[in-house]
Length: 306
DNA sequence: TTCCAGGTGCATA
DNA sequence: TATGCACATGGA
Image (tube, rainbow, N blue to C red; front, side, top):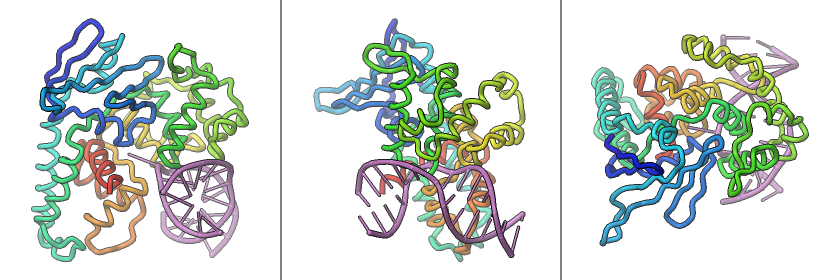
């Protein structure tokens, strides 16, 4: 997408594929604040303020992202990627699937091809300004271990407590802790932060990461990456997918949680059969392939807004 | 009070 | 291999 950089800012004029609310409130990231119209997002020991640019009619016409690390946040916001193209390609892939399955759709709970198309288009339109953030690996792993069987408000609270407990005090906020800082926390420390039964999982994860070779991990096949993550007690199939999607920007995975399960059963489940989450993931990745991660996020945001 | 949330591990069949 | 249950916690 088009953007300009200044010494301490990034200027976005194309609001068709950048919307601060969509990006931060779609569930991919937990460390952000909203004050008035201004969002502040935190990553590692950095922050960026996203200030909407308003015209004389009070319409948002762009954004100014204020940060000391422009290069980091250009990558973080995935600014060199064209999300209008992504959305077009999602529609192409979905239409292709509908064409191939036209006969079977007669039995669908939503038995009208037109309305099936509409639902994808509505989701893309509803979250039109979503971008998939390139988050820090460590942060993504820790945050999504906390996320399991939990709600977003609570997840945010637990993460903030952990940052306050052992992250570097940056003056106006706490940095996300380094691995070394996290390794000093006990099960009880994580419990004190509100992690509940996930406290043991967090300690396991931190221990695993201490012998983890990130460079080597990135060279592995997707299947090997997943089985590596699954070897950690506390990381299951869904969290592994989230780590790969949000921490490693791998768009070929499709995390299936309670919301995506609802989406699947409403719009895709032709025979009204009971499928496991693993089966749902298989179906959805076979439809959307290397665009799975993107559409997953649009659908999650859309479904949760209802 | 009960249900639910960006699930997972473990016992059981 | 598949299924069912327990697991902390707090907001709705």
